[in-house]
Length: 124
Image (cartoon, rainbow, N blue to C red; front, side, top):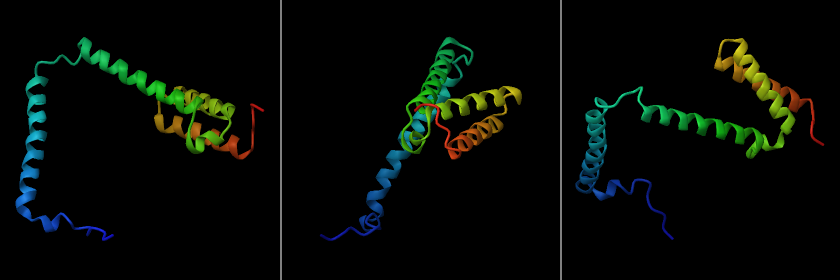
């Protein structure tokens, strides 16, 4: 079987690329124009934006809890107790440093690495 050239699109010629570029531009600019027209009529403090914000925070919280309690990949090899203690350390550091996210993440990662490297197991 002959493999296609990495530059297969070049052999198509410019005549068939232009319609695709024009269609892509029209679709993109249509939604941008619609957003610009509607944005002046929306209240950023209204109930729709409040609902969207609540849904976004709920999704983030759910994914975070799932990552801690039911991880996949390399995090699955760590102990649940170590993950929970690292989470508590991150939250405490976050609060003590006036919501400094980099320091909270650094504290959580450091505690998780230290407990895992030491071979600490809370659940037999």
